[in-house]
Length: 260
Image 1 (cartoon, rainbow, N blue to C red):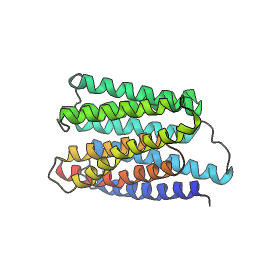
Image 2 (spheres, rainbow, N blue to C red):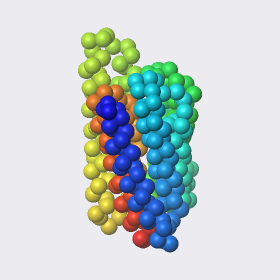
Image 3 (cartoon, helix red, strand yellow):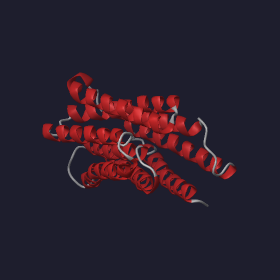
Image 4 (cartoon, one colour):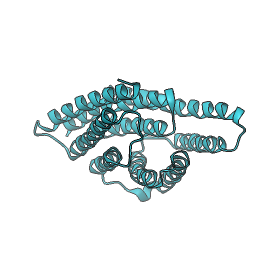
């Protein structure tokens, strides 16, 4: 079994554990719509993983076509967004600036994905559904006053610097590309580590369950962004981080159901 299949198997096992845990939670009669939508999101990822494993076994080393794995990822983003809207009635108008910046970030990210892969349809659709999830998340966090204004500014500045760095790589000489690439990777993990640590710590504090879910989703959303912008060993680390965000969300969902 190659490294890619091993990682996919690890991801599948973790997602299966999370899915079983969610089934147990929503079967106790106190389920919430947020938990139900999250369960379907996990199921979508599982279907994508099963397809990926089957394809890797049947056609190892060949490029995967447009197929069920993309559809599974799209469904995941839409269902995660729906789970947020089921938590609260989101007022996007209240977070106009933050949502606009999020749209600009995902638009720039989508343009980068296309320039790297050349897959226009896949990347544009992914950008739309991923952007929907991000906009729901950002708007709800703004509505709940979870982030001070200066931190919004810091996140916006880092995101702008990251996009600029990724664009610069296309224009600098070859002997400088690696340095700029490493700078971008360092910038991404400089944000990802605090997000994951905050998601872990929030499970132990007295924050409202809805806020715990949002913080876990933030770690997940940024980890996915890092994964989409990475290759090689960095991609593997980002994939593992993304995988581990789901058990954290499972625990947050359990607290949300218990509180409801």
